[in-house]
Structure formats: structure tokens, C-alpha cells
Length: 151
Image 1 (tube, rainbow, N blue to C red):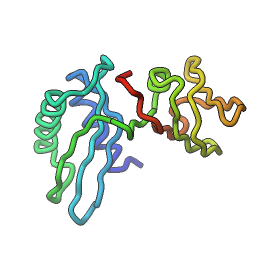
Image 2 (tube, rainbow, N blue to C red):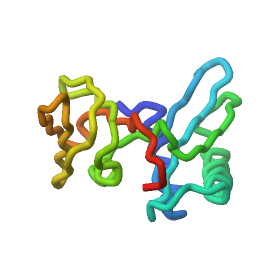
Image 3 (tube, rainbow, N blue to C red):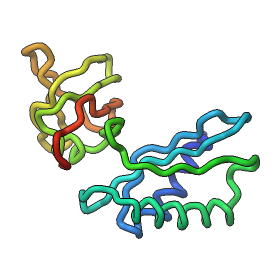
């Protein structure tokens, strides 16, 4: 069964990928009251997300939402760069952040540890001196430490 968020993620990806943007996270917050549709994006070329990117994404995605009307009630659309809340979902996301702390939940694990290595889809973390290797996309990962410069 597809959830509303999954449908919104599919729509966002279809509209934003041709603009050179990657949809990292879609959340429908406060459903039923004063809903906010929050979309976190990154650039596919891995350059920093700029105001121009956010404006273009907002215009394009907003127009598609207006046409399709997947959220019947009034809502607010917010687009943002991932910043310190960066979700890490693909192996390349972890590879870009090697050495930084990641918060990991899933596959029977819950820890915050440095990203040690990436080999294909396998991501290895140094958890108190012990290597734990998990498959990217099979667990929830978020950056727990903001890098001093863009990566």
C-alpha cells in the first residue's frame, strides 16, 4: 500500500530530478490541522544548494502540486537544503561524509558512530572500536556532525 508521503516523494522526484536536484526527504507534518509539506533537496552535482535552487524547485513542484492536487486541504510548502539534518540514504551519501559521525537506526542497531568505509552498498561504522557493516538503504542514517566545509 502506498502512503501519501510515498506518492508525494514520487511526484517531487519526477519534477525535481530534471532540474538537477535530488529529493532526500519528504514529510507531511501536522496532517489534518495546519499541514506543512517539507521537502529536503540536494543538488545532483553535489554542489551546495542555493537560494536559486530552492526558488526553482518551489515553483516547479508547487505548479505540479496545484495541477495534481494530492493534498486536498490547505497546506504550506517548504523546501530546504539538508543542512545538519541530512538524511543519508545512498552509499554515495555516506562516501561523501567519510570520517564524520552518523546516527544509525535499523537492522537491529541504534548508534552514533563515525563512517569508516564504503564498499559498494556496504557501509562500515566504527562503533567503539568494533566495525559494524550495514547495507545502504536498509537502515535509517542521518548526519550527526556538520562538516566544516561543503562535501
